[in-house]
Length: 325
Image (tube, rainbow, N blue to C red; front, side, top):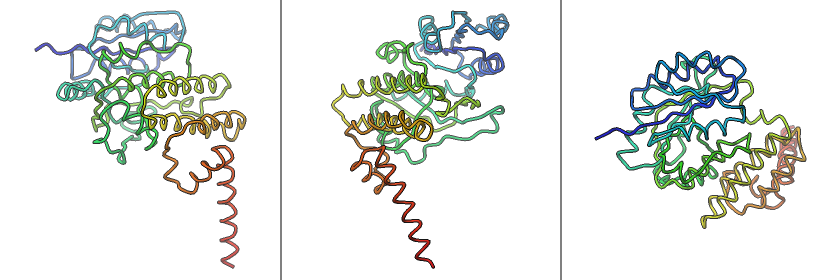
């Protein structure tokens, strides 16, 4: 039986310091029927000087005009011939057994999508912080829609390096949205998850996510980035509203809540904008586990409910201190 071809797509922009290590992690895979596709999105840091060596090792390398990572991924998809797709950022690293272990299990149970645990690292992958979702009941997560409901109710997520995707899902999900610059991966994988009929988790750390100073939600340091993230959440919400399962909207509530938290101190008007979208969605939330806080939110809305809850907590703390004397 012929083994399936796996395409690994790596968009890169001015990541010459990390790209070689990333590519080496793909070439060192224990599963060998792979093609590696590097799309240089108009780098200005001499990234192309690595291409001759990459090509000698069988890597496909392309230089395109700078139009963003989503455009580069779309070009990569147009070149890919694999039955399965691994998206890989140019500073992240794959464990040598990632493709083999994921693909083997996917074929055994006829899954169209799988993810693994991953680890955050800065320079040395031997010094990392693990992401293990020990509180998630994976036995109840069978489809991509189940994953999104769990995102909202259990407050977790999966990053691109952790996924392995069957090409049938790529065809259903369509292209990456080139008009989104923040949460473009979240919007894209929401479409992947929406169409997935069987998702499995490989409970091993098989992906390594490089944390840079500009990473995390706090990097939403401009109005444009906020609006892009806000737009992506709107697109995801509209997709989920097409389904009869309103529990899916708990995923949207989670996204708007975290956007609200990010903007709460420095950008109160933006925070209020995210809170309004949170309030519009009639669905459950991981916040319901905080019963008193959840009551305030349901009565007064996220923005004012949070203010009231925080002030009431401060008052109770003061009362308790007074009662001690």
